[in-house]
Image 1 (cartoon, rainbow, N blue to C red):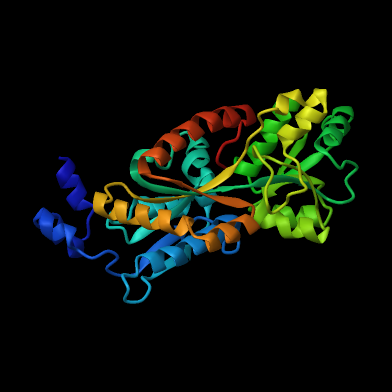
Image 2 (image 1 turned 180 degrees about the vertical axis):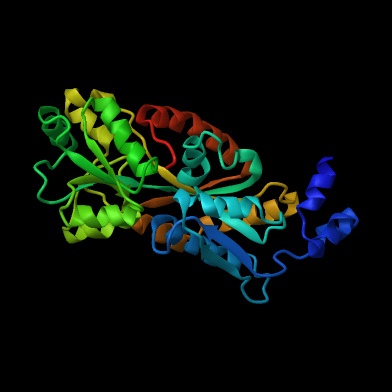
Length: 339
């Protein structure tokens, strides 16, 4: 029955290799045509930036000496990244349709639905690509310059301070919910249809506060349009070396001890549909490792507040399961649901 279902999901043009001898299948060139790398968010966002660097590198690594292979980034925004993930889930498992997945699309989005749109079993994890820094930012006019000052300010004005996010249940929403839970402060959530819109209103002073990726917020911090209160991950970032982590803030102020292990770090990983042939997975995995070892890629990622971090297929699957356990608690606390 499994074989019959697999053949039904495969287009007629691709069905014959599945019945060919194993040796012939192993000799089938990959990629045989342009590869679509789907991104569930608009062009110019954090995920898109890293996907384009990865696509360029994979094209060079898999070009086979006869010119670069074509890896084409295709933006398919909608439903918090779910539309792109669903498109890859339904694609033929031949390696020519891939996903630049993230913690938002592969872990958080399914937790927001009573009936998840997909499960980990619907994908082949190929390789973890990067850890992505997240920063707590405020408008320059906000009456606080540090996390400690923010917490003290909010405690004296419960429910009077608002914050922006890219939508109900997205990473920057849940990061703030985690901060609220750890510190006992009460902030009002104002969700937007995308982080770019939310960030624009914080820059304009319409709202005072939000978490966002360093890739998006970094240029505005450096220009003075925003001020950075703290990095949400476990270590400072080369892109913003003067900004302490929230965990560091806990060391400076006993009232913030609950933030001693605060870690909300985004990530990007490469996925294919379920049933991706092992030979194709291995080729993509090895090429990704090669791309991430490049000093140029490391510099490009660092400038965006990210760090190349390779994991193979098995390690990525284990990491995703660990992330699911962590974010399940955050989603339950926030009460967030897909709307």
